[in-house]
Amino acid sequence: MPRYGRISRIGAGIVEVANASRWWCRADHDATGSGLPAARSSREDLRHAVAAAEAQPVSAVVQGAGQAAEGATVSVAGLPNSALRGAGAKFVRDFTKADKRPPDPYSVYAAQAAEAMVAAIAASNGTRADINKKVFALNLRNSILGALRFNANGDVTSNPVTIYKIKGGKSTTLRVIVPPRALVKAA
Image 1: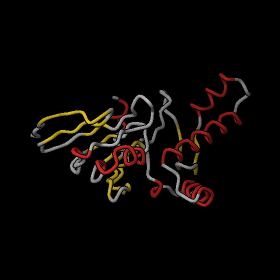
Image 2: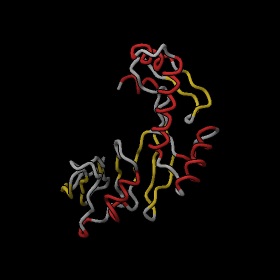
Image 3: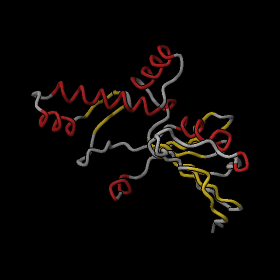
Image 4: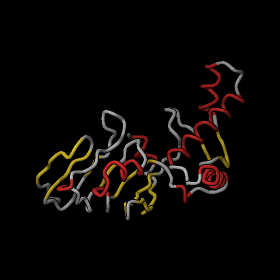
């Protein structure tokens, strides 16, 4: 059973738990949308933290929290670039060549969303209603993310979560988990 210790707020979206056997650090966007604030120097030891970067790149956690992010574990919805195959791996190579740095995984998902919309528009009769219908009927194979389909709620049917560890100011992939569909359906 974890001890929770003293809880204090460092700034918007980051919480320090002192003297605890487990830490939880939630990494949400602050009111300005810039991500996490820089941690105060007296509170920079978050080596045992677990941060949930909800809808923001791991790079924003590192940039916003600075040294406080070192050693933190961060969960992010989606696959890491290293897990992409076929068209996804080609997209990462081409993007890296053009931009001189690899894309953030969220950029890969944005490109996949654009590809899905273009496919739905191409298959439609051009009306908004038909485009919407075609999005739900999509079954893309060999796309940037591999197979891509949507469920009745409009969520993608593949829901991987990547667990990253912050080391040396960079994210390294610890593992990818895929929650069972029954769990995702219940959410």
